[in-house]
Image (cartoon, rainbow, N blue to C red; front, side, top):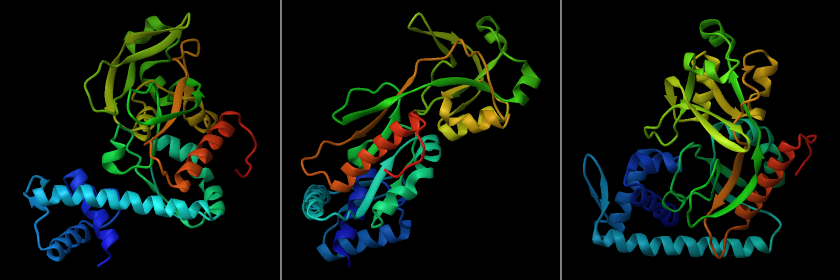
Amino acid sequence: MDKIETMKRFIAVAQTGSFTQASNQLGVPKSAISMSVSRLEEHLQTRLLRRSTRQVSLTEAGERYLSQSQRLIDELEGLENQFQRESNELSGVIKVDMPSRFFSTVVAPNLHQWFELHPKTQLRLVGADYRIDLIKERIDCVIRGGVLEDSNLIARHLGDIEMINCVSPSYVERYGLPTQLNQLDQHFVVDYAPEQSAQQSGFEYVKNNKSHFVSTKSLISVSTTDAYLSACLNGLGIIQLPKWGVQEQIARGELIEVLSDYVCMPMPMSVLYESRHQQPRRIREFIDWISHLFARFRNNQPDTKL
């Protein structure tokens, strides 16, 4: 039994309260997670989890074991960090959460550069598109767009990105081309609600450095950035998103820019991470790499190694 890996699997189950979620988080089959925890309980000769058809909860012994095992894993990471500082070679898993469109447009095309520099690292992408608990889900860092809420996390501002309004040719065929704000009551927007909470759909724009909101009908509400773009491409409404994310679709005629005089505020992009005394060097360097990558992308500089 790999005690460290087994411990990590137990922590994942304890933090998520689900073998299925732990399986998704770690990228390990649910059966393997369940077997590891069962063997751990047999080894310790005590019950760590209460299992039911709906949820998994900790026993008193499980709560004590969780606290001490988390402390041990953190100490091991600190030890690893200590030796990595003495070596030029990085290794280990980097667990990151970021919007799916940001990954596919900005990060994925350039990841080969990171792995050329650090071939012994591995990236584990969550891509949730909604707010998650870094500490609970053991995420090393997240990338988010928009105004940040207050939290205990460290936030590093990456920059602001220009926004654009788009529709598809098929949408124009059905509903016409919107050219004025007073026409919006005849049109639809794609509602983007990553938190899956009820909110009023509408069209945002800036005038005299102030944001304004026009209530607008919506045919569909989505919770991921990929679905948001896909809905627009299929003629389901107007979308407002970063200009660099749809340049190819506009060039190919798959999307049409509309209402260019009524764009919303530039979107601030940030990377957030937990404040830790001994943060692994691979995490620090990956955050630096993302920051330089984003700056280069915004400036449209030629592709060069970072």
